[in-house]
Length: 607
Image (cartoon, rainbow, N blue to C red; front, side):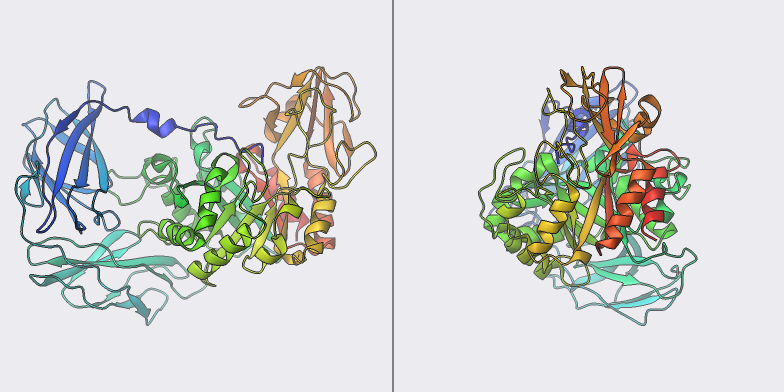
């Protein structure tokens, strides 16, 4: 969709300017070599930010790493990320986490910390050897144990069992991790975890430690849901009510997961799409790691009312979503990849769908947050057609990609896709086999908005989200009804189609005509982007004074806007039910009022 420009792209990068590197390096284990390098990436006088980079410079894989160094008295680590950092006096030790211990030849991994004091590290050791690659420790780290199996699940406990890891010097014990945090260390290959909450999702992994106290990589993850009813009932009705939560909204928009609670929206939705993961080199990757899993929340900002600590294994949006799901167990969360800005990587992904699907599952099932996500959403704009860039993967590309995703994720995960709503003859729906792809998907989010807007600066003015066609519409087929009808004709079941609602308006300036079809001189001013404004702003600054084709418009001064209101949403939800659609979705939460009146309209309309 045109609206999905990342307003805060690059923000996390701006937080971490690079300084000169101070070389400190080393071998990792027998038959390979590695280096460890330190850089002070930021200094604000009263403190600083440091970063270590471990690189495998050998020809065989490195299965774990431990970096040690000394700080002069008065210099210390105050918080750290992407490693477990401990100290004994002025001696500091950083060990890999379960997800980042394995390094292929030529690969590198970085971890960082905030510190106080003016000193620099000295006496660096990597896996017991020097950090410059001149000595080679002789002990290999253990292998990953087998993925644990769960049995005897009750309201408050679960028994876990796994196959043993292997090691050249012998296994000492195993760490059992729940949701990425160690909950027990045992010598055998089974453990019963107790004291759990009923009706709650958990994710477990296991990692081995050898007699030399080296930690190996984590096993695969097993997801467990304890038995028992929960106090929070699901929303009434059987329709999907899904909203997009934007990763970058925590910056300029100051919109956080807790806002879903304070607005009352969390109790009225069924699903959340977390947007967006990136698609790079044909692979799924986390985009803004700071917002996703490192940003610390204070007690008053967090869903649980508990402040994040510097050493907890998961922070940021992912941890807040975990807390939201604990409070509202009916909500399912999907990780959405792509969007307008990041769809360029799907063409390469389509060349090797199996590898793409495998990379996506590795991200979604990362042991630190495997319990957070219930599925994956692919927002490819657009397969075999033009969006920000033009794709020529062919009409079968989406079908091949969704088939690979379903095969990789299995039937217990949700797999969905956001798709074009271009219902014109020979348009974007006709360019792709959406009917064939639908057999592998739980539903399509049909983006029935952004049809018209100030990207055509002189107009004509037209509602950006018309439900039906109307006399004078600038483009035939650019409306919800035609798009839904065309998808049904392609063989997509009605129940697999969700109607899209925009929580924003599109507008022009230099307009003298109140009715649609007027000329303009350009885009109307917007808070974040010209030609676009949130509903919560427009309802007060330019109230709707007309309706057409099932949506609203407003002419105020020289500006002309179109957007949906609670009243027009009610009409669209009634239409969706009459069409037998699976429900509705919207872009995105932060455009709504503080009391969630648009979410309320969707919920009420789909009951």
